[in-house]
Length: 448
Ligand SMILES: NC(=O)c1ccc[n+]([C@@H]2O[C@H](COP(=O)([O-])OP(=O)(O)OC[C@H]3O[C@@H](n4cnc5c(N)ncnc54)[C@H](O)[C@@H]3O)[C@@H](O)[C@H]2O)c1
Image (cartoon, rainbow, N blue to C red; front, side, top):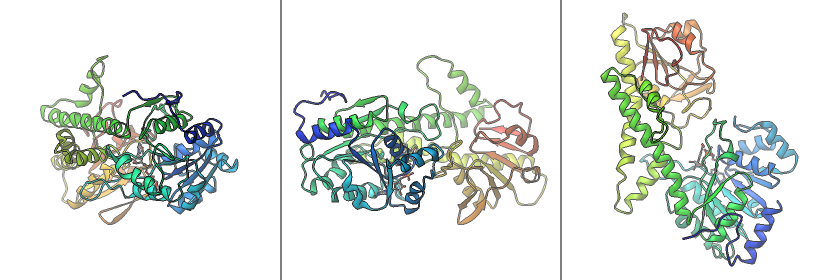
């Protein structure tokens, strides 16, 4: 099926769709961003700076207060841009769902976590859809951006909108356009990340593409919301599976006395047919979570995504592998009877971001604590954290602190850490991230 490219209105566009297209074009359209987290806030600020009046709606009153005060709680969003958008009347944050009625477009950017049993938790999406439906009016466009299984837009969001009495494609419009940003990645700001969009009907694709083209240089249309939903999952499953492959190779290399980092670097010199992935701890709220959405949905079709299960098995084993190797390396060198001390450097799920949701470094701490290890950590982005019900505070990187440890595990390689100094003062370093790549390694450094 041919889909209309954004910019080319599909044939037979209704008067309501034409009117919204014009309002998007002239910046008269009011846009509501539902959920002001890592995805929603940057988008709201970009849309405001593109000239739209943006209503940022979040159920978290603290976030709303900060935005209204011109404060940014995200490193990627400069406070000055928030303040300018708020002061100029372009951005207004609120916790009042009634305000959604003022908007021509609602973009849903709410969380999609999984349950304890690793099944999709779509309650945030459903609540957002219910709240949008409560104030729906003709000519309204809803865009879902939260990552979810193929079918979410049609099966979960559409019924809420339709229950309010409007026909999708006639009175109101609906599309899915996954968010593909990577917080902390300065090479690819929002504008440079192409948007994939799939509407429930050609008008939905067209209108969503038209709006998102104001904040992204490229829009790629697909035939249905499910195709766009699957595209996003393919991207994240691809990453998860490939990391699992190098993680398994890393374990084999260790047994064979080979250096996985040297091998990945060498393989990456091939100019085609190879893509480089680093071994390590896999965390965050996307890569380890999203594949479960697909595996869950696949079962409805009597289908088992073995790649996803296998990748999860390998990647979820990594914290246990890291903890075990650290303990084994300490035991080989241990000369005292006191409890073992391990210091974890970097506990966020990736470098240079403050996000520690589903961080595998915390899992390493959890495993070590269960082994009665005295655990401490340092992370410039996380002053305090709870592990196994205990509160830990980030320790300073001093000679006394580092010298007192049996092992320092570099779990996340933040740019600001003095790695060479660390290796010079620690008894033993387990470098899980190859942070000491450019440093001559002494006998006290082991790598993944
Ligand atoms: N963070 C990323 O790097 C990233 C990248 C691509 C895709 N995604 C996906 O985007 C979605 C959002 O992720 P995030 O990281 O921004 O989450 P987040 O937790 O940072 O932000 C979500 C926000 O939504 C708010 N919220 C929850 N329910 C709400 C409701 N009914 N109405 C209004 N606000 C509500 C929360 O209070 C929170 O502020 C998820 O599906 C995620 O998988 C995230």
